[in-house]
Amino acid sequence: MAGRVIRARKQVLLATGAGPELGLGHLTRCSALAAQLRKRDLECWLVGAPVKSDFSSSLPPRRIEAGLVWDRTRADLGRFEKLLASQSWGGVVVDHPNAGFEYQKLVLETKTPWLQFDCESGSDLLANLVVNANPGCEEQREMRPEQRLLLGPQFAILRPEFSLARAKRKEGMGLHLAISFGGGDDRGAMDLALQALVEILPLGLTVTIIAGPAHPGIPLLRDRVKRISGRSVSLEVNPPSVSDLLSQADLVLLAGGTMTFEAAALGLPMALIAIAGNQVKQSQGWERLGAANFLGEVEALTGEAVAASLQELIDDQPRRRAMSEVGSVSCDGNGGARVADAFLKLISQHREKT
Image (cartoon, rainbow, N blue to C red; front, side, top):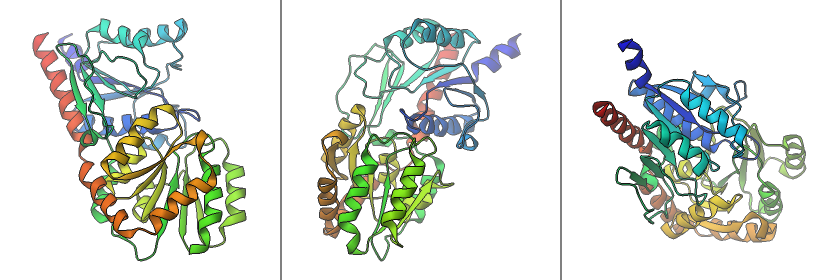
């Protein structure tokens, strides 16, 4: 019996989500954190990812299909409660913008060591450990006595491949633009980017467009790229290594989500479009820090405005170099280890008390 208890205390549940609407950023972050936790002899179980998918090879081997949809209905809350009660978890990680008070209350009642990512949803967070890597995150939420906040890009959790790419990246001889708006629905941002390319392609710019497997319009996107590309533009759908593609770029046009930390770690100047409400503060934070141009929210932009902003950065090499330095200094690629160490310490302290 004692052996079972010890093993249970080493098992960590990571609850997240992925799909066309949400994208893959939260899932990618949890997978990278799980890799760090496994290095610290913790067993990780992931819930919220499809059991079979085009990106399943990068996920933790232990996955649970619980049917969570994070819609705050009584049925979904019941599924989450059942999952929490399925065993005596050693720790719980929650990473979803819809994980508001109703879900948090269920975790709190288990008295399990608990880490939650602040997804800028506006909800108060009750977790023991709250992570917000937003570069503009300086506000201190009202905290419970036992709560700890990990704030800023130094706690950004990157896929291991980006730490390796960071060490190898060199500035190119030409000018190479990479474009990506995450793994899901870009909400019209790619359409703006393609309009902008028509304006700036005559400059001889090399462009790589990266689309994720959950993007709902891949066939249409392929067709549109073919019509404007020639030799200057390539489309990569669900590439085996995003880090290799980004490390070849000199400038990126991105959504204001989790990929901004990967670009910053590689020292890439960023032009950012917010395709979701919780990306606005993060994009503004990168701009205030000096690592990015925030173009605005996708609904308020035109292709001409995107082209003008990109043209401004293309014409200003000294500014791009300054943005590169700011980004790489602020996000050193070791955030996953810092968060994992802090969570392991929390779990260990809990064990000592019980």
